[in-house]
Length: 220
Image 1 (tube, rainbow, N blue to C red):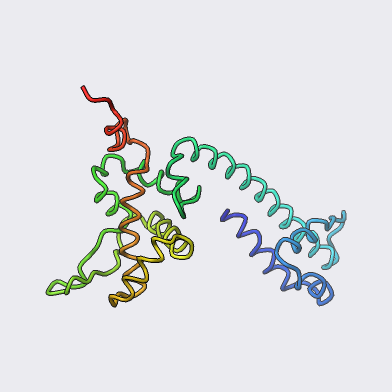
Image 2 (tube, rainbow, N blue to C red):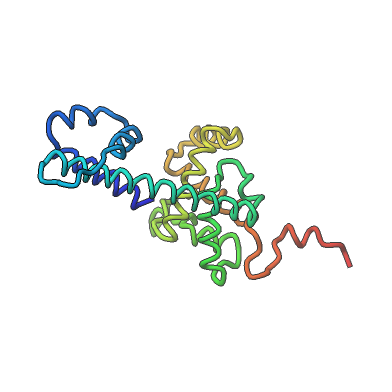
């Protein structure tokens, strides 16, 4: 995905140096229409003329973008299929799509020996509360800048979705806002709650049964 983005940026940067006629033909197009138009440029045997060289470069970058685009779709399809198979309950949670679920699985899997509780998982994601100061804080906390930043960003995306579409979250935001908390403080609290929820939805690590698995076992 980074390479695909780089190809698009390079194509647009190259187009800036094209002739006025070619820029007028292409600059108003959307990204996808732009690469589609440039991909149709054919290369002449001779690239002596600046216009021919420009069309050759733009066509090459556009075709590279399409190759990377197809590769991204193939990889995404396989990753989504594996994520659904490994953590079906996590994918079904509100606001947690396949990308967020995959990020949580990677975070937990890379640190399985360090996650012994939901609190440890929250700390790993940078979602544990930190006092706003060393003295009296009146119960106020600040954002945690530590932990896995990719996992923290995934939690943030899920929270933003829930704040828009999840009624219990909407009600919580309204109540905490009335109590005087800022939006940043509310999101911090919601991240901590979501980290706890995700920890219980993750598959067992290293064969360790979850709390739900133990509850389902028949009594001796």
